[in-house]
Image (cartoon, rainbow, N blue to C red; front, side, top):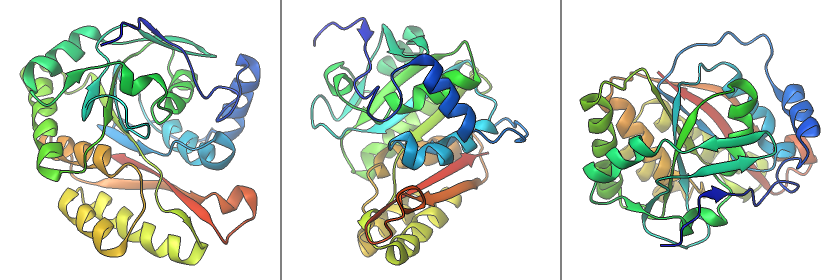
Amino acid sequence: MASINLRKPVVAGQFYPAGESELRGLIASLADKPAQKSDCLGCILPHAGYVYSGRVAASTVSGMKIRDSVVLLGPNHTGHGAAFSIMPKGSWQTPLGNVEINSSLAGLFLDKSPELEADTLAHAQEHSLEVELPLLQYFKIDFKIVPIAVMTEDLARLEKVAQDLAAVITENNLQNSVTFIASSDLTHYEPLASAKIKDALAIEAILDLDGQKLKNRVQESGISMCGFAPIAILLKVAKLLGAKKGKLVKYQTSGDASGDNESVVGYAGITIN
């Protein structure tokens, strides 16, 4: 395993501005300023360029009380690293500063779950977690992260990891200290009408906190969401930790920004309580 103490941004200047002032200004323009902040166990956020999915993500985070530690669950787009790759120590850099990894919590997860592997390779070029960090930093100055990249859609394995994560939280009385965030875009590159139909099916299953229903609908309807795996982990963790429901905060597609409704990507911001 390569030793990387500082994970530098790889999509700054592409998915979001590389300059601090420009980045802060953009997030400010996307935020839902009147939103009342409420405590929640976690959320689902999109991870496209901010021009496309930033309003959905910022609107969702606007209404959240971000806890002191954030477990970031994202899909592995690069194919590098382990099936369940957790970066156990170091910091992640963004234009808004560095975010430290909660190495003690990461260590507890590694000790509990035989599926999780300490691995930096999966995270080196992966954008799905990186793009969430500036949004979190804008709303909360001081927090730590545990980054986990997932590269399997085996529901039994996903739910076993979820059970291990939830066990660490309960055994260490961390129920009020950790926020879970699953990173995913929804339907990819379909006409607006079909994307909306498919995304509605996926969103309904997520709001029911039902990972099996979500997997069935993804398979039966050919829903090309990239983050089924991290969402499935989040849903199982949420149920084990006592969450009762999801709430759709905002849904848009890339067509809202581009004007091209012939080939859109869907984005949903959902909180889990």
